[in-house]
Length: 252
Length: 252
DNA sequence: CCAACTTTGTGCAAGCGTTCACAAGCGGTA
DNA sequence: TACCGCTTGTGAACGCTTGCACAAAGTTGG
Image (cartoon, rainbow over all chains, first blue to last red; front, side, top):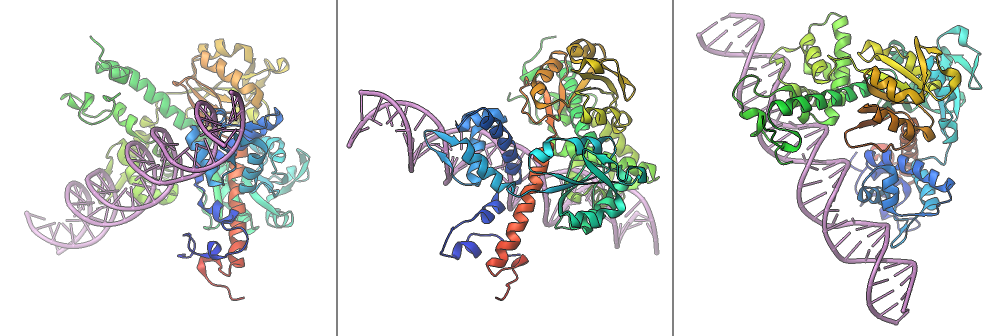
């Protein structure tokens, strides 16, 4: 445990070759910055297509919807690849972000639960085009077994363990009803899948070494609902109390 | 600006009635806590169905996958509704969280873009059952106009403004291809929609008063990819340096 | 070659959010 | 009633993230 962090151990003490390598760097990147790097990457990919070769932090930040200082700090986590007075070379930046995000390897994806959402995910072009080929589909319904969806035949969930191991699936996507989610998750884990994207509205229990990200539509809606309510209350309440927005007093 | 926060201004100084009301409280709840409240609510709803009447912070925290201290702090933002030595009354907690999240009103939803994802969303049972009735669907394809999806006929996107205003839509969901997203967003905004849930992989430009939340599948996958890569590098690197997981030294 | 201008990379301080630790409060029991 | 054990609610410390502001470093033009 104690040997994991710090700058005085491991890599740095070795004199030869790269002094601070990707691995050491990757470890230090804040989670929040990683999420933004993915956004920058998408924006930059669009730039490449438009033939843009160079971009300043100000421009890129604007396109990504963040503060330029934050953008520069985020990029500084992955190294210094900009040119002062000029900006960043778009292609260089793209390749470095891809490297840091681990996109130089393909990550096979398995989708479990071929309902409405599962269908949408299986057909979603955004996955394969960004290095996430869908390698397997699973459902509990025997009638679906063998039926191709998005070009891939559906397997039965009893075969998750074998098929996932066989096809070297590294990311499992759970799009099942909530009741089935934990059981599916357990199977994925026992198949060696270490990363899970969970669309089912349940809190999954997994071993420490498994990374879970969840997308919960109901939660997203409720957060929006909160803002609607807050706004309505603010408008009503502020006037009632004789105080308008920004503390401006409203005469009765 | 300066009059917005603090405890010595506005509401608190008024002696009568409720001393600190919902409005003032809602404003102070951190965004992160709001997201968790929605999760607590779902867990609690499950508890109600199981007939559980009382629950401790420790139990609820476990079920929601968070630290119990964090849970208590989150609940403290909405008021003190627990009983020391006992725990929380499940139903009381549910009704207070619903009130804070603004779920006492119905929030009509419009889904724009009836492709794979749009279909899935239109048919998603989780929306109406949690107080988010789907009131309108839109697509650019004239062939889809009038066709019912999930019981609701699809309208053409040219009619967004009128239909949304008419049906009092408060939340817009964008499930279009990225190219169309900004234009659709602009229409929703001009229809008076103040909250948007965006599935398109673009950064939307909106006025300050509009709340946007985005769900970006590619970004989620890339974050997972980052963790896969980091883990692989760690394992490889640590062994190369003669140091295994948890700092255990591996003899050569 | 120098000066003026542009843009990066980063030290630092402020702001949030999380976690700890414990006093305060409640129910049960003798 | 007085005590005991349990659980909440919260002040305070800590750590992560953000935003500012500026030195460093590069380019361009003369």
